Each structure stands twice: as C-alpha cells, then as structure tokens.
Image 1 (tube, protein in one colour):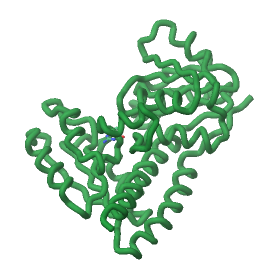
Image 2 (image 1 turned 90 degrees about the vertical axis):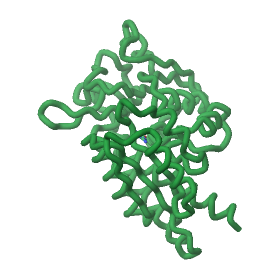
Image 3 (image 1 turned 45 degrees about the vertical axis):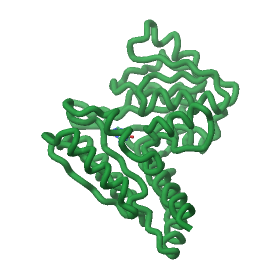
Image 4 (image 1 turned 30 degrees about the vertical axis):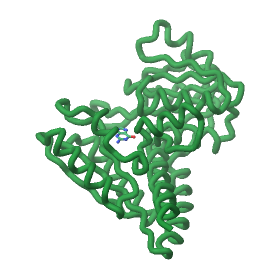
Length: 286
Ligand code: GUN
C-alpha cells in the first residue's frame, strides 16, 4: 500500500483564498486585519518562518507589521513593545516568535499579549478554553493537524491517536483537540521506552519532537494517518520531518510531507486566527 499524501501547501492556498474574500468584505467596511510579528535576535529559522507568515498575510490582504528587536533586548524592552501592540487598534493579532534568547522568559512574554490579540493561542485564557472545549483561539499547528485530518476524511472519533511530543505549542494542545474530537489519546515523547510499541497502536500518529527520522516504518500501523509536524534542517541543507517519509509512506494510509505539509497549513491557520480576531474586534466596536 502507498499512503495518500495530504498536500498542506495546496490546502493552505485554498484556505488563504477563502480568507481573502472575508478580508475583502472587512476592508470594504473599513477594517483591515493586522498582524504584528516580533522577532528578538536573528535566528535564521525564525526569520524564515516570519517571512512565510508575512507572505501569507499579504496574499490574504492582511496587513502585517514586523518588529525586530536585538538579541540583547531586555525582558522589559519586549514587554514594552507587546504593551504598545496591545493598545494599537490597527493590530488585531500579535505573535512573538519562539524560541526567544535564553535570558528572556518566553512564558512571561507570551502571557503579556492581550488574550484578544493572542493569535498563537498560547495565553492561559485560550489554553483554558481549549481544555474546556469552549470557543477560543486554538494554537495554529494543532489546528492545522486537525484540518488536514478532516480534509483527508480521516475518522477521529473512537480511534486511537498517539501524539509524540509534549510541547505547549504542539503536543499538548494537539492531544486535547484529539480528545475533544472523541479519540482515545496517548501522549508520549522521544524518550518513551519502546516508543514503537506505542506508536504501532496508533490509527492517527502525530509527531512533533524535532528529531529527524525518529519514526521509521516498523513503528507505524499499516493504514495509519501520519501527521509529521517536525521541520529539521539536515547537514546537507535539506528539510526533513520527524518521520522517515520514504519508508513510512509505503505502509501508512495517509501521510503529510515535509516540506509542504503541516508548515504551510500552520501559517494559514495563523492568518485565519488574525482575521477572526479582526472580525471580533469589529463586532465589539459597533
Ligand atoms: N515557534 C515555533 N512555532 C511557533 C508558533 O506557532 N508560534 C510562535 N510564536 N513561535 C513559534
């Protein structure tokens, strides 16, 4: 069997063109959705991600305003900028790109973003809403994961989902979304003893560890849906996921490629979260 490839790039293009229509009607009412992006320091991977986010905003007609701070910026410098963005009516969403330089407390910075503008969905307000399964802003990569499963027609309810990774950006919220969708969920990590014995039980396998090629063919149940969240830069400069794509695609039912899988869809979800924040702000100003 050869897996169906879930084309995240194509799906993201569709999503962005849908959003463009919504943005066009918002702009006709005098509201231009705005995303503020903040990069502290000059991490090359972060700069690429920020550029991709700005490009997707532009394609959807969303204004993106980028702020660079030097790697030497103090926590107060970052907090001052976040506060300024919290008070700027043209900004509907703010993201501070992670990771931050080591002397800065990412949790403190993320929690300083007003929850109405928290389009990453990292605020405790929004994470709490996710936990309670009530409306809120859902983190972009886990949303992308669920959107790709839905698009591919992968059943989730009553299935066994295994999430490898426990970050607050991906692993934990992905597990909660899968729980909310009725799956039986196991969460493990790259150090779980006999990881393959767990991952082989998965009807849906979500992998977000940042370890290239961690998941090999013998760790995947035939016919499983495999969502590869990893983006790893190899020594030769190429990008690879956490899943050994060439061998796993021979056995999986569905698989997402890297690049061109979860990454572009994550960016589209960020644009959607920003547009939704602008719609809410416009509604509350009437
Ligand atoms: N770094 C890696 N993924 C993300 C993300 O989704 N949001 C932010 N702000 N930083 C990240």
